Length: 120
Image: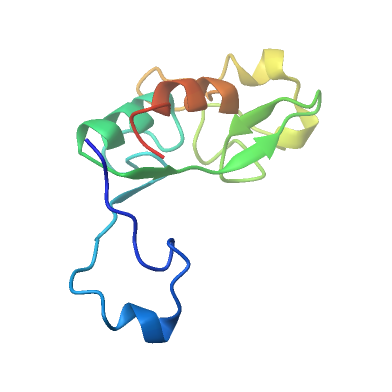
């Protein structure tokens, strides 16, 4: 199903948009579907898609060994069973953390694969 593109995304100026007769309301899943599933996890992304979001907003941090992962905070203690600064941890250690409900911290690439063709 094709989605309408908002006037601003079409490059229309403010003066030109006054002639647009309808507005598109975009549904954006914050950290996937935070509040429904553990934030910034694949389960949260899947839940957001199931709820009908148009886009998924996630946060990205880099591990010590350069892997891009979904994580909002600089430290892992608020959202996982671990402690420490994410940027001081290697992917091998990060991948074993429980981010809630048995979920782990996903790689950005995994998240893009889940959302591909289903949400922006």
